Amino acid sequence: MELNTYLHFNGNCAEAFKFYEKSLGGKILMMMTHADAPPELKVPDEWRSKIMHARMSFGDQVLMGSDAPPDRYSKPAGFSVSISVKGAEEAERLYKALSEGGQIHMALAETFWAIRFGMFVDKFGVPWMINAEKTPA
Image (cartoon, rainbow, N blue to C red; front, side, top):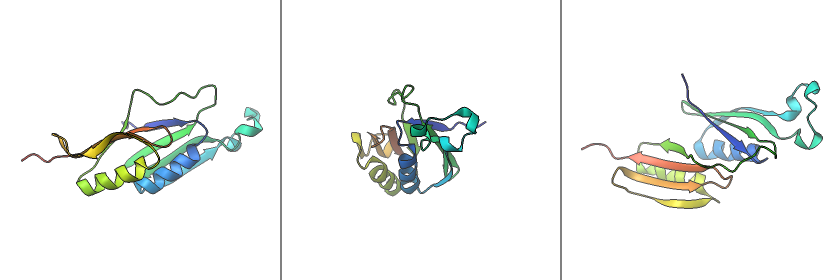
């Protein structure tokens, strides 16, 4: 069994996935637009360039997403995409890259459980947590 994150965007999925590919050091494996759909689906012209399905990998992880139709888009709430890393340097790199242009909720800092932990909403409206746990003594 696999558990993967699937994000819905408000028309900017392609831009978000290119940003995540660069920030996470990943690789976009698939970026299908609605124009790629069979003709019988009759996609409106203004929706043809929007993303029907995107998938990227980074390490052994997968992130997927798509553009939600305007009448079905909801601002992300009630969850965070959590990334756990080993080491303060990697936590700092990811936090800086992914939070660029976003809204900081908790600055990256040492906590009682982590050498680095921070929370933010990125410039696409997706909430994230970056965590580098302390190793037991």
